[in-house]
Length: 64
Picture 1: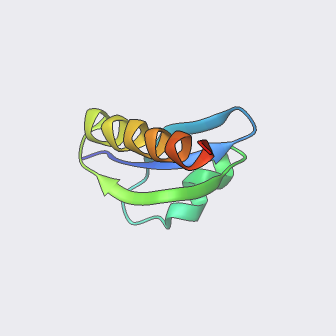
Picture 2: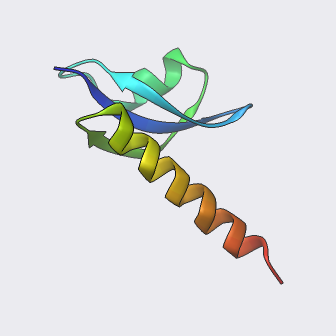
Picture 3: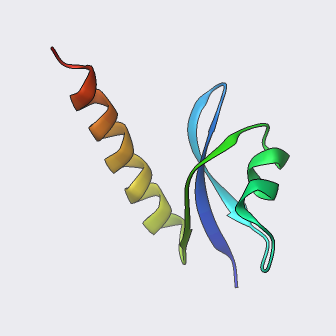
């Protein structure tokens, strides 16, 4: 069963697959990023929905 988390890379936020039993930081390192939300999410779609929510929050914080 695949699990997913959200990481931030130089290109921005992205969803990555986490190997079962591996720490979240390992998956982030494979993608040259840092863990933003370790989840774990059971589906890519759930993780992507969470990513969109994080981006919306970030945009709200940037407003004056």
